[in-house]
Length: 185
Image (tube, rainbow, N blue to C red; front, side):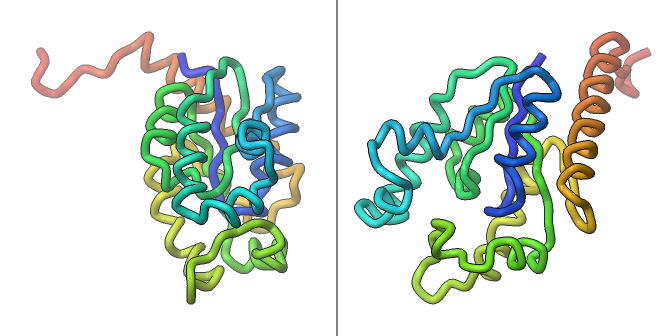
């Protein structure tokens, strides 16, 4: 059974904050892959991006995330990990991907200044454009989606814990009683 939880979502959605508490509550480790990237490169994320650009950063992000060796861990990658095919395939293999979903308005209110937060916007791209671009990726990779709309952080944590428990119970039930296909007598 996949023992890891991987949190995806926009910056300021609470991947690290929610992730740390969920890890504590479930007795799991917590891994922030942005910190692994900084450790490997010996620089802050914004310094890496300034040096190698967005494409170069995505290569590093893909390499670090796709080589994460983890068991019984909550993993919080950066928001742009969804552009990293190998990393996302790796995460889907080693765990359950949890998409923390919030509206553009909620994230914009939390983040205030995307540039200071280390959000990379291409020339002429707005934060709204980035949000709209990423949503289909989050939805594509998510095994579980937890909406944060109108929730305080404690409620989001409870909703994640409930969703994970339900998912694990479903997985267990499906293993014990495999569904028969219609064409099987």
